[in-house]
Length: 189
Image (cartoon, rainbow, N blue to C red; front, side, top):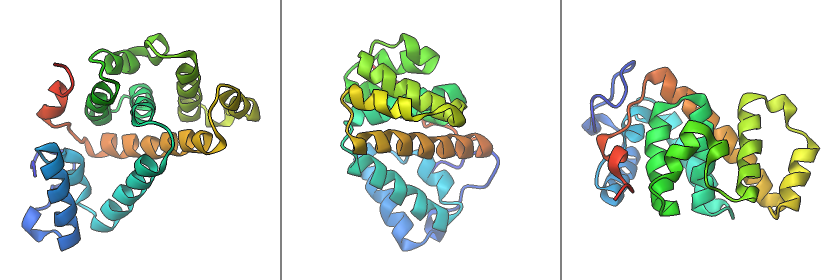
């Protein structure tokens, strides 16, 4: 685990972590080929680590949105929130799942200019409105998503993913979480 995963709180020693956290970190390290700094940072508070990754997994694995759409929401929301960690880390995931080396940069800079379908642009508009001005999300927004072909459950998931990553963005910014160098280059080849 990188000691510089965050600058405002200490990163705990791997050997001092509970067994279940080490197992989760090991699994992610094996899968990614490196330990994403979010795991090192969240290990500071083991109970919150567990809740965070459990909810993340429920959102990502339990949604009927495709993974590209999930990551597009994360990057558009992280872009307007200026979350350095999520822009870079989830930008890499957008590049991988969309098989598009440009899309993540478009989403971060100005999601409205990204090369996406009208349906996905609507999805991102609702996610960004929920991020910036949640009181302005209305029944008409949900109806528009339904008319665009999103199921009731997908509409729920758009809101849940947006809300979760707003939390994640704020925590990452608060602790000054730093993206791993590896994320900067993933999916650009």
